[in-house]
Length: 201
Image (tube, rainbow, N blue to C red; front, top):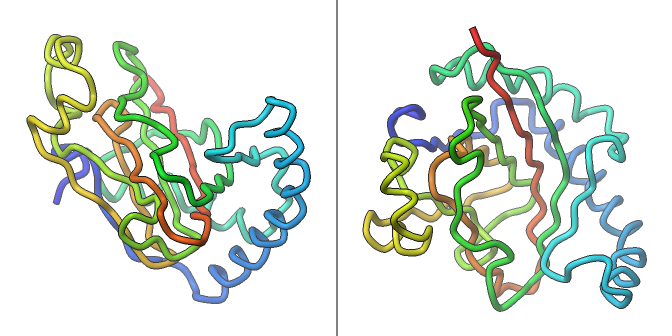
């Protein structure tokens, strides 16, 4: 399956298992430390209840550097070269009866393409907040994207869900239509999200 043609590709964990364990342990530590702040933010109306982000500048995880260093080469192996890391964050998605984000595409109409990498740090089962994507929607015309909403395109073209075990990596073209499924489990989805820009030639 081609990332450039399909818009999304799933990879297995390419690093040592001990690295994933360290990342999981550290992410759960962060989750415990931010819970009070998050709950207070929801009460005050400064934070949404559907997800919480810890931005890269807040993440003091030494083992994370191995993933950041290898991330551009993973994209290069799938035909996307000359990339740079624009942003990275840890995202926690708690149980919630509706998706925290609707069907959408990013960077619509912008000349600089962008790709993202999602790394599941917790097991993500069906209806557990898994990522979903409309294959080949990254290749349709701008007129088509302007004519229909993201949800209409997902119905017309069909979409795929991507549950997975901890360590699952998803690379995707953000110009394609994508979203998440509601989390009906009793556990939060924890994932690392890395955003890439492409250097213009």
